[in-house]
Image (cartoon, rainbow, N blue to C red; front, side):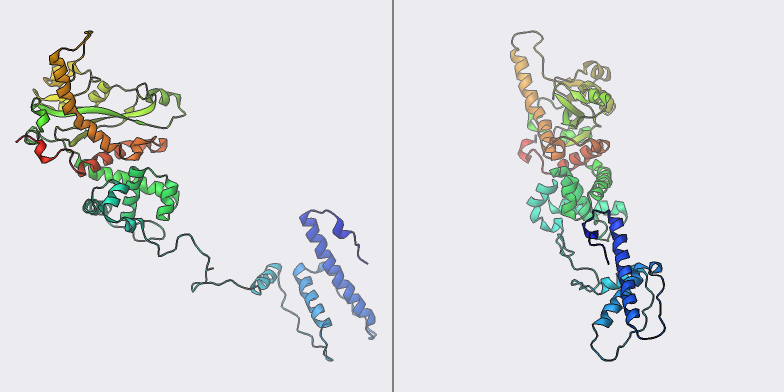
Length: 416
């Protein structure tokens, strides 16, 4: 009665589903016709048109027909008509009859997770000051707790929901690890069990708060304070108030042509940003300027810093050969200490050679400070372009952390 070539036809999914439903309905109708023909009753009960039945009703009636045919009892017990069910209700009932997996007390499916709820935080894995210094650059645990206390006071209160956000301690640790190790936000998200977007948001929020706090760790000392902390190598330069130098940080190449031109550095051979740093004779960082494009000159950064207004007449500024600021210092009555040029001579005079050695021995302190700042890999590696709006905050935080570390000179290196 049925077409056996039906299953050999290549039909679309919707057509196939419709055909299967028609076969089921026709099969039910055919079984009813056979049953009615064999009935000895004089009255033939005709079933309603099968086409008017829904798929759920057809499935339910087919189930009852099969159940009744397999019943061997002499008395045919007919179950009452089932409550009319829709197709979603029939699927729901079928799903309830399937075997269930093991579940926890809350009714959630107990599936294994990569990070369980009772995992140890990253801070608990840091054993001692050595690990803390390697991961964050903070010299010891005492300094970290002091910094955390100030940040918590600045925020007003600490967030306490570990499932949706991090605590103040973990957000501070995340920010410092980004500066020190320059881990990607994807790696940080795996370590702190949050999304990479949340890591980015936490970093940007915390770096601005750290900059507000650590800018007080970069003081500009008075003349009397500098004279009380003068190293032995400055015995011939006692009027020195500040030592200046510039450093460059490589950045990602921008798609903007003007940005690439303004940030290209011939000295580094790539796109960079430049910052002016000032160090006291004792080795303390006393000035951190804003970032400029790598094309900017040292003189332009010095004039934009406004340091001439902070210095008094007859004080000295020690710089490198790239600072051509003689006229500006002369107008303010400030002495300029700089290694001498050869001025076309084939060889330096003994006096110039001695001055060069003495200035280099004194200027090495600013180089050592810059070296400690470059330990933070976010400055050593290529700086991410999307973090450029926070570059001034980043350099301020790093300079403040370096000032909180151990001094670069021991006590026996100072004049008594």
